[in-house]
Image (tube, rainbow over all chains, first blue to last red; front, side, top):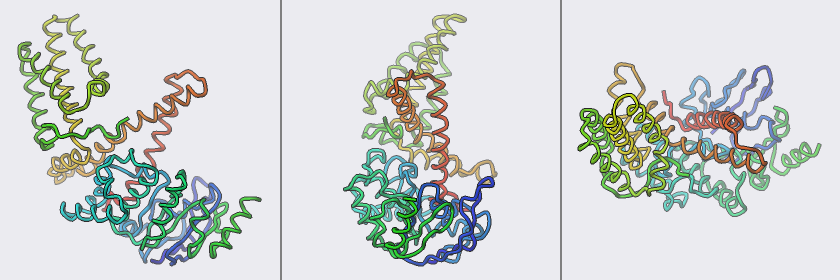
Length: 226
Length: 201
């Protein structure tokens, strides 16, 4: 799916969070890195319309994130830094079903899709567990399942391996690698994006590098050590 | 700390449909206010306590959940004793406590999702008149039940942070950060609800 930024700019109370950005993303695996406050989360949130451009446009699959907000949002799933905050209901299976209920599907179809997505991520045994009882890795998997169950073409993950131990980090890395969907990951975990198709580096609200991982990571390290 | 207020189990109340429980609660509330007869109200209180405990909640947790409301009931009963009579005070105490215990029993045996579904069903006819959007109301109720325990947990963390720094736990210094953090969380949660496509119109 094509993600197109056309001179997209974001300003908060006179402060520019993202300078005019013109960019087309078509790759299956896209990494986004940058220091804290560099504009990378703002850029990612623009893709599913959570942040609206104050100037310019953003389109996903040809749909404008402002004019066609709902349809555009349906094409993208978003995993927040703290996935606990996006679990609306306390039981994992119920939370996964929540997104489907909002789409007015029938009971049988909801149950079938919920079971299928739990099985897809190997977490069927966690279906009736309370979300606050899940480990960090299990919570991430649950959040990914709850978003992908509605069938978006693109999944955006905001620092998915943050605060995970090595074992869970490896689990999430494997899961992301195996996803058939297009994926955009914002991260400080450079190992996670080493095999990605394209990596964007943001610095002070601007795109500082846009290339293959090795080169982009080198630029990021230079920025970080300045 | 529980996340959500329902507890797992297979008691009679757990198996009852949500609508049945809400109607029974409604009828009980009216019935309790129609009588001041202690011969009926005292057994009703004992029965409601038994019903509440039959949910498998455990006496400690059961008391913890209702203690604040029961304290208020006690104050109201005390006022009735001062201004009316002992009989009136006992009737008020039994009536309100019974209602609190019954409501707590319903809450303890009903999952948030089931609550939300039922509220949506009950309010959907009102949508025709443009009064409410049923899904919004049910989500609001669901969010309150889901996140109230989380706010308590957050309070515990702030209090612990005070203790760890050797500071006294004062209402002002705990409530201010609690309110700020809760509002920040609310922002993220609202964004997450949007991201999950709750509003599709």
